Image (cartoon, rainbow over all chains, first blue to last red; front, top):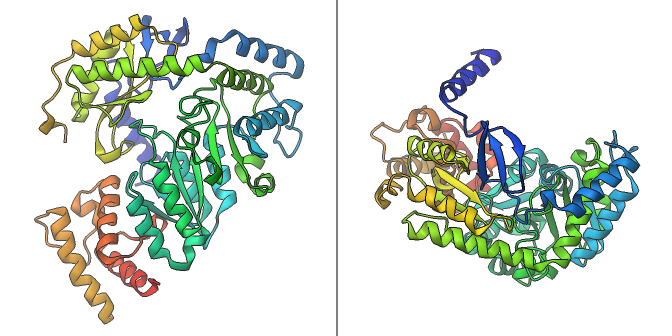
Amino acid sequence: MSLLSRIQKFAQQHADSDNSFTAPLGAVIEHLYSATEGSINGRRTILVGTNNYLGLTFDNNCINASNHATRSYGTGTTGSRLANGSYAGHQALEHDLANFYGVDYSIVFSTGYTANLGMITALVGKGDTIVLDEHCHASIYDGCMLSGADIIHFRHNNAEDLDKRLRRLGDKASSTVIIVEGIYSMLGDRARLAEIIEVKKKYEALILIDEAHSLGVLGESGRGLSQEANVEKDIDFITGTFSKSLAGIGGYCVSQHQELDVLRYLSRPYIFTASPSPGTIASTRAALEIIKTTPSLRERLWENAHRLYDGLLSLGYELSPEVSPVIAVNVGSPDNALSMWKKLFDRGIYVNLVMPPATPNSKCLLRCSVSAAHSNAQLDVVLDAFANLQNPLPKEQLA
Amino acid sequence: MSSQCDDAKSELISLLNKLTKTDIEITESLHIMNDLDLDSVMVMELMMELEDHFDISIPLNTLPDVNTVADLIQEISKLKNQTP
């Protein structure tokens, strides 16, 4: 089969699934009324799949900062950080991030994806080993593949399994980096970080944690799971994104290791990407300040997470394992998942439809992400829509 | 085929029969994904079971070159030799 005919085959499959209504993968938001409501197909829709955890996309301080920076520095940098793309704002944001985490070193990347790609490829190479949780995000897997290191995954959140795999490495365990996430993006569960850190210390490996979904969500100051689990001093590298709680786009890595500052010269995804726009950098700085100074947003987020999780549970749905701003509803077969997604969509509710192989354990999921900006009334509309779907499938049909 | 390969072969075929619950006869030329109708997630789960059974780690980056049962036998034998 030629390359183009292979693509045409995929295009036909996509067309077949796309001919009757707005496809879950192609919903276009025509207007946004707020952080939690928009218009899709001309219908006012409550957005429950945006990762906009703190609802800061329309925050006045962030918008004003972005406007001011755009007026002052222009719409884009048109170059890499190692060429003409390092502005005072980029350095200031790196300083802010290091201060926020209480470490000395920080790098800003252009996306969360390139933060993982850039860090992993700079940190390890051929002859090294990466041991990662099997539920890690695609950006981590892609970084691992690109690095040339040996890639070994361990059973999700299973420190004993991690221990076993490091033991098998023998002397190579000490040239290994372990990679986990603060909150896993599909099921919303936390890494069992304290147990994992014990194993990391036993084998003298390094650990990198991606706090993309936990920044601003977990920890007393919003620094993520590492703070909540009280293990920050044992973490070697923290990566994250600006595109969730910080309501922009971009990524970062912070570390207590001075080597981080040199890694930027070894990181091709950092070197060969234009740096984030001045407006993005400015709004991100403003959003980070809000995370630091407004813990009530985090409290509101968790109230909303409990409201939706408990409500769905009481309706009989099989849910992801713990209460979190990411709530995954297990909906059985692909046909059932698509049908339920469409019924919710027709009632003005947008959630993420996630199908295998992008899901753990080959499950079809309706993935909801809760925001601090959701009102009780909005969440009640969402629960009402779920209540009016066909009765949840019996447990045996969800396996 | 070396004796280590022979050992791995008989153990692997018996394990594949057990883990995939297939009616298909497992032969060395069988294509693991296509003939056993496994998706990528199922292959990952299968590999973890094999890793535990043989007490080895099969790096994911080696899997693109492992297509048939014979490839897998070779890889397992190689890794068993390297085990510290």
